[in-house]
Image 1 (cartoon, one colour):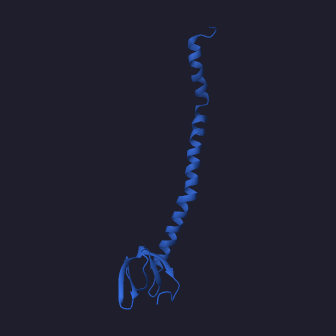
Image 2 (cartoon, rainbow, N blue to C red):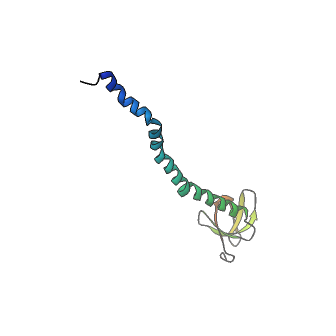
Image 3 (cartoon, helix red, strand yellow):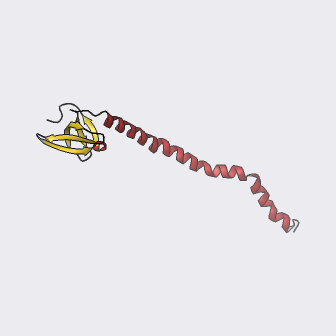
Amino acid sequence: MFISSAFAQTAPAAAAAEGGMMSSLTGMLPLVLMFVVLYFVMIRPQMKRQKEHRAMVEALSKGDDVATSGGILGRVVDLDEQFLFIEIAAGVKVQIQRSAVVQVLPKGTVK
């Protein structure tokens, strides 16, 4: 009635243009915060575990008692670049990949 229809139609567009940049940043803030939390809760600890496992596998030597991912316990009798030969019983040797070693056990665990 007192406001022309052209002015009434452009008023919301002008208000949206003023806060457009700020509202888009505010809309992205939860996404950025979620990624930061995801990084510190999941990605970073996983990378740390991978680094520790890689160091453990590289430090293997003959005579170490190991546990594999399949649950086999044995003593390392021979080493290769990618494979290990572990003795699981007297005269029984098994070839496994180095990455299959999950844990180095204390000496004397495997008899």
